[in-house]
Length: 153
Image 1 (cartoon, rainbow, N blue to C red):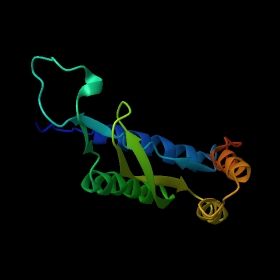
Image 2: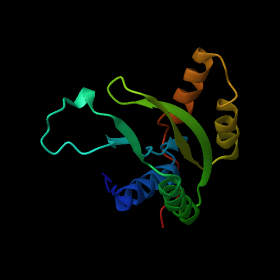
Image 3: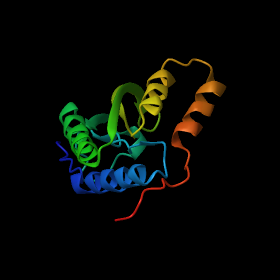
């Protein structure tokens, strides 16, 4: 059975637009865009629903590398339009459905930011090994800040 996956790209575009505006207004240091959710589907059909869900064999069906490329392109285009920068960091997560087989799932952290020093701290974040220090850095990067004092037209 093939399960078609439809990713609402307009939703991601809308989020990128809103977060870029927040960065332009100076109310955030950086934004971590929402990730694409890992999706599982049954390996074989069970139309009569005779097997309990935890006895079905599940397989990873999405997101694909193509989905990630499209998502990155949406975010990069909007960031460029808004004068923001993007840092893309590939991370590997382990996914499991109902205690079944584990699968390594590629994920990407897509960061939006405006200031170069924030970009340097985002890059350094992935080198930190101390969990307490990493947590502090995440909190600082994602904190709300005072709005920028931009002259109005």
